[in-house]
Length: 271
Image (tube, rainbow, N blue to C red; front, top):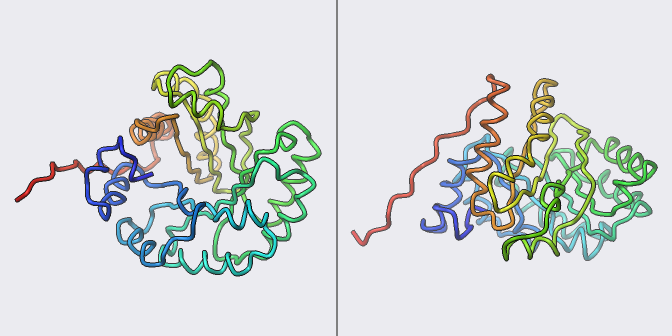
């Protein structure tokens, strides 16, 4: 995410882009790890560009979650855990995003997988099968399995996005790719994680997240430490919007620490 072409930090050398992003936001989704396990040296460079309190929520590689569906994955899992070791505590949560075909009947497989994971990390699971959101029995089964492993359920809230038809190319692309799932806002642990998809119009994005401001404020008052990721179809304004969401929450929870002051991007010169 820190290399997004429309963000100011993209003008910086690749080795400096994450450092710049970390001056805007204090957490990031690690989507690239879904496609391949990164080199350990690459991960070490991520650690060098971020402070010890920065949060990486890293997606497990698709060979583990989608191709092998959590079975016979010992080698791939060991390689991934070794690669991310340089992050230390920055590896806030390992994110198990499961395909839409992963159904309630597959939950026992998930339970076995979670219970074999090392306790040195936190884990969170994102499911996309409709039954988990529409059938009480399926939801309770998943919640019990996650609670047994002290893992979180990550909601991906697309309800605001799907309220009205798309009006841009980016929205039309997201319209056919993003999951349409009912809203869920129940935290299972003290470190809930939420993914929210708004619209390319910032006003509509802000309107759609008001319920999450309420939920986040309640979580903070309960002593939880939530992580909120703000997306739009083109993600051009995502860092600015993330800071605005944080400001909206902080206005109601004044004791919440402010985000860092963004570092300006100096123009590149030849001298």
